[in-house]
Image (cartoon, rainbow, N blue to C red; front, side, top):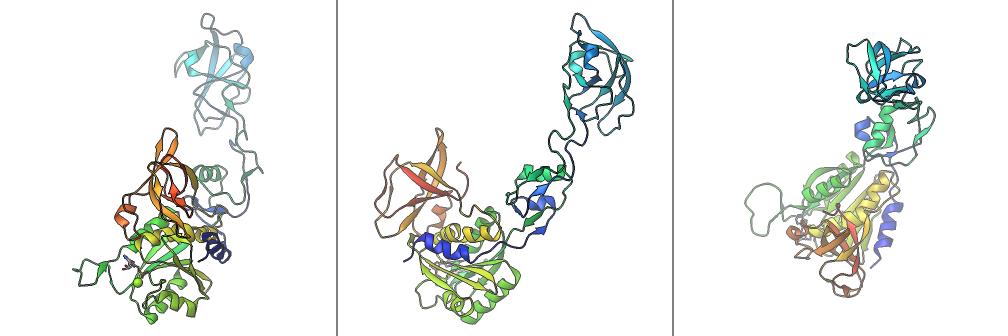
Length: 406
Ligand code: AMP
Ligand code: MG
């Protein structure tokens, strides 16, 4: 057996970031920016009002108070989107809306709540003195032209997309999301609604793995089921490698007579077959076929999930150009004891993580067998238990998060 760290290293060193391409802004969410983005434009592009009110000269209203209003002549109205063509002279004001350009001559905005007048009035009474520059958003006060707005390697979140839009970058150059083809293998698998014949079961790994991969930001596609037949597996793998950036198979990498994925991968793809010192998901095969990484995940439903989370994700994140290769690991409090048998492996118990008085609490789901998919569906984390007896109730445990705690 080899350690998880060693297996992971094997995968990561054989996956490299995809070539960056320009993509439409909304499609760049969750992608890594290839190079630093410098702002071609200032934000805001001009000084504008932060309030609905009146653009004034602060000196004109320095004595204004509710008991001693200062009356100003209203010489224009400025809406957002309008061009400021009239200047504010001494004793004058311009009625101004949020986002409208501050006209020349004005150096502050009095909010409408501190005035008396009306939309059509030719004079306005200012009830409050205002500091120079008040409620004026200076040009370039958010972003100066030439400023680095996004650092190279940034994982784009929603506001980053907005920042790029705000400076007019419509198609940022990012590492595209990897497309992962998901195949399952097994003569026993039925993936339509036919009644099951003796020995058959329903295929369940593809929807699970496609869903899990998508939840991790990977563009996963369902490539169907292949029988336990060398030629069929070779053909399906080759086709998958020609249409995807990575391939994940499930089944056929164990010690059985018909575990042919590892046989075919060995022939086609410079495969490494590993016995990883983890439970579940001990068998794992990894090969590179026509420069495309192939993750040979074990067939047991829970094992395939664990294998994708611990060994698939680092490889897929590397393809996506990310520096943070692993799913987040947090320190949680064991609800009941998390017990396990010493067996030379690290155990990954499926746990439900919830917030409990400011900490995350981990409770094991009811059944921990590698075929107990129904129970595993209630888990959002994998409690990482080093070889040994486990963790007592209330003890600290590391949890790999598959989804945020609830
Ligand atoms: P294998 O790794 O191919 O030996 O499969 C291990 C176990 O997982 C067997 O009981 C299989 O029937 C089961 N299994 C394999 N692939 C799937 C699948 N796609 N959906 C449901 N069960 C599966
Ligand atoms: Mg099989």
